[in-house]
Image 1 (cartoon, rainbow, N blue to C red):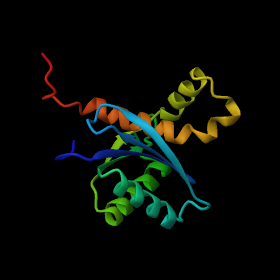
Image 2: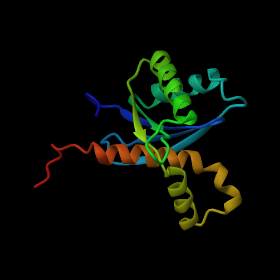
Image 3: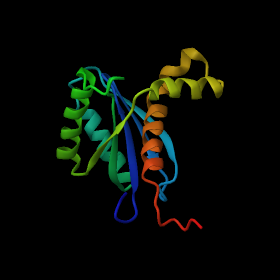
Length: 151
């Protein structure tokens, strides 16, 4: 996952928001962090500035970015924009960015909020950061350390 120390940052990239989540230092769990909002999809300056602050504050060593493939595995317009954002992230933050299939994460995030008693009108306050946590948790589960001492 990462060479030593640090954390992993999960991102759910949307047209006007970027949901963020962080791993714990042992790479076992993902927790929602915040939602970064922007007025225009192509205005990345403040988003990148905030992500750089998060990377520095939490000693992030790897970024996991959700890839919104179509249900038939094809790459649609949203996925193309997400891949372009990956290239910007790698260039500006000098960190590796891995892609993680994010199909149905927003649906799962809404289920989590409903089960947690979040009012439907408040979903927008949380859905993107919860989706980022689901994306990151899926990555962590798929890359669980084999040397973790399992008997």
